[in-house]
Length: 283
Image (cartoon, rainbow, N blue to C red; front, side):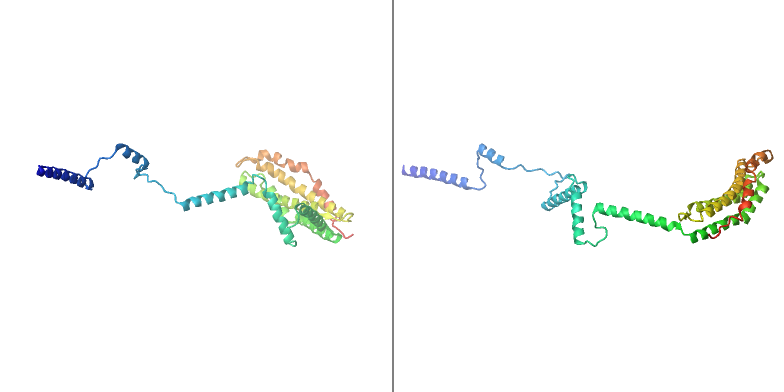
């Protein structure tokens, strides 16, 4: 009986010991509460699955600060450039005013309106001075008119004018257009030279009441008569050059000579009638 009891206690003790050993064994499997597992799983953050082909870019704090700084500078530049509030003109004016007060002797630092008035006044003064400089004294007028007179006479007596007449007489009926063009060139050059002399005479500024006004008009008239003489030849050349290359020119002779016939010899006669007496003389 006693042995049975001991054996029974021993069996129970052995069973208790076995149970304790199994509960403390780290390799033993424990049964957990399902609700406890669910509660803990909700607290954990789900792990993100990385895409190996599109890795997630991580923006560092330094890069973020740099982006913000660039954006601020760009906004400031845009504000100054477009000036939406219209404050920059006043700012510029304040800078100019400060510079004027600090450096009063600097050129161009004066007030805007006053500077414009001064500039306009200076321009008017310069214009008046230019007109005065162009006005010839009596001695300068005599020298200038004498030179222009001699140039007109030189054209009349020069080889260029004589060659222009000879070239016309020899080639205005040529069937070759190229030969007519070459022969006509001298006449047009003489006409341009005379036009230049007339332009210079028109540009002369004499003193008010100058005694050389009549001399200027006389020299200009001599140049005008010479111009009319060469212009009649050029007009006939215009008709001749209007016909094509290889044209039979004999049938067009009257049309070619018509401008010269209409001009007549009035300019020639008038020139020789006055050329000697109209030489400028000292008054």
